[in-house]
Each structure stands twice: as structure tokens, then as C-alpha cells.
Length: 281
Image (cartoon, rainbow, N blue to C red; front, side, top):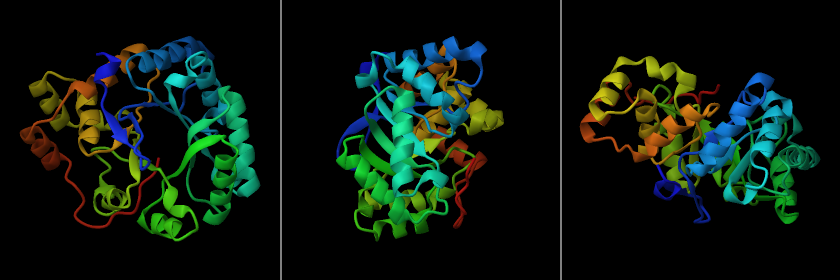
């Protein structure tokens, strides 16, 4: 499981990033698990899972502080992502929130900065903050999270709004609504789709069809669920709080699902038959 064999996905700029990264939701909140979580993040980087996603919301900054400690001396190996809370997402607030994240992460810049979800501030305000951060070289790219087709279409009508690099959304075998409209829209617009909770925080692993496919392929259900997301051309950022879990996740990169496996999963967990409101966790 070398880093060299890791698959990548392209951003609109053409830059390639790891298709399978590491999420940090709920990390950094239990002191008893801190060393294990740091070891897990570092191992993930060793194994090529070099997109590390966090947010100011996670543990009120505790996850960012954990990531900053884990990446000490390794910052340049990682594509680092964080998010601004909607309540902070006016022009000045976006800049201030990013600066707080940078301090906690012990870095001078983010590779990608996302609006966590849409709130009361107009998108123009957030976009102006992103522009200020780009000009100050405190972020390299900006994007959004939990924005549906109508939101994305509105965003692209704003000056500079067509420069969104990523829409990070809830997507997994049991949450396939974006396949109807948002995922095709992102493909056409050149926006990279990134899936959070790609195994539904473990709940999707209870589906028997997933176990059957995993047995046939000599894999684990989690590896099949992650490989399925990657097969859709979507990046995935599963939470990785223990080294064994990281190694299991990494195995998904070496797993290619044959047609019969994809068909079995479609039968058990079918794609949407019409428009579906964007789901969130």
C-alpha cells in the first residue's frame, strides 16, 4: 500500500489531489485518544491520503489544533482543507475565521477554504472574503460545502463565483440524491465533488448486500463503500481516528468494483428516481 499507488482527482485548475483523504470530524475532543488520532493522521499521510479536511466548527477548533500538531514538520506533504462557519461568513468575518484556523493549524496558508454551509450572509460577502484571502496568499483555492444546484447556479452568476474549486457534500451508497442533478452539474461546470461521511458514519456498513460484495472481492464492507464513491469520480474524506482504520480505508484505493458488484449495490441501494433535496449531517 505505497503512497505512489494512490489515485488522484483533478481540481478545476488541473492540480491533482489524493482521491481518498482523511476527515477529522469529532477528532481532538477526547484527550485519551489524542496520541492515537495523531498517529492515525500521520500514517494516512505516509500512505498517500494527503488531503486532510477539518473545520473551525469541529470541537470548536480542537480538530484544527490536533491536525496542526499531527502535521508538524510535514505541512508541505498535505493538501489542507478547512471551513468557515456560516455565522462568520461576511467579508471581514471570513478573513478573521481563516486567520484563526491558520493559527490553530500552525500554518501560513490553507490549500482550500470552504463555506461550511449557506447561512444568513449573502454569498457576495463570503466571496469577497475569499478574494481578500487569495490576494493575501492565505488560501490557494476556495469552495463551498452543502450547496445544492440552485445555490451553485446562483454562485456562478456572481463576479468570480465561477472559480469555486470544490463542492463538499454528503454522499455515500445510502445518500445518492446528488446523482440526479448536483453531480452532473458539477461535472459540467468543472467543479470537483468531494464526499463527506462516505460510509454514513458506519451506518451503511449494516447493509447485507455490501457484505456480500465484500466477501466476493476479499475486501471489507468499508473498503467497498469507499471504492464505490471513488468509482463515481468523487473524492472521499472518511474520518480516520485509529491507525488500523486508516489502513483499512487505504485498501479501498486498490479495489476496483466489477460491473456485477456495482449492479448488486444498485439493486440494494438504488440511485434516485427524481430530484432529492440535498441531505446534510
